[in-house]
Image: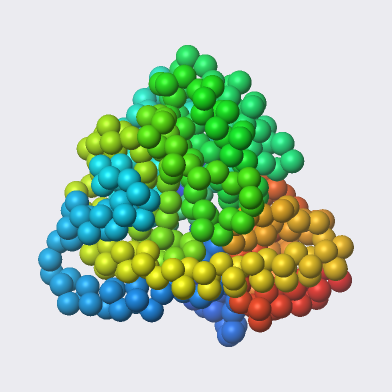
Length: 366
Ligand SMILES: *Cc1c(COP(=O)(O)O)cnc(C)c1O
């Protein structure tokens, strides 16, 4: 090819840095020939999904030749019941990442600005830049979103603001009063996307119930996922809750069959298994305490987290400690690309998995 394809790409795509996923177990096995690898790098559920979700997924395998229900009727009906809202408020996504991208495609042009926080989830810069919009990154406060400063950053060109609550990779969360004050201060042409991927794990008393605000704020979009506490990351199912007019616009840019039938069936069944979700929360609560105490006992600081992960300051370049941990058969997540060069993000695992990480840290940090 005479011309470099990069010159053909849109300006946004030219400068795009692809998302860096956690290292797959099979890759580390291949590279180092290790067995018994512990992966706590992608905020996956150590319990996995509800047995009811597995069974629903298995049943859906009998119909693989058919297209899925493009409207996702059954799942949306279950979500409507779950949230006490009508079905017209929901948009289904191939994971909630898909929904974040739908927001960018439906609402952003290169003339628009998007506000998000320093240390915020990596998908916000990607979807913003992919459509050529301009990112306004607001400095964090104590690792968390500074909602006042984010509100103050709104200008005539601001169209979307992303708030991760809790945020990944910091685990920090925003209180109901502050988030509500932000919403009330926003001009109505600014859409506030509140990304609640870790909603089910949150135990903070001051955490908002944003789905109850949907009727009040037509510019509020709340996103949720089945990837984390419901243990279905592999199937890719997430959704947005919004004003029906916003949902209608998101559905216009959605691929007709963006959520597959196995995911639809499993997600619906997962939603109904309250006991499994409670078990998932309990394992997280206990593992969180184990990791926090273990880190503190080793003199390592950590950022208080409401997610299913803990970002620990290892006091030296995180990338080096990450690489040393790989040789111990332990995969965690380096977060230097999030502006956190001495932190490692560790997903909460089962007791023995958490212990493996702490023991490996002892050897690596000594
Ligand atoms: C994991 C995560 C998501 C969820 O991604 P899916 O596409 O639903 O798997 C969304 N937002 C944040 C902040 C996350 O950490």
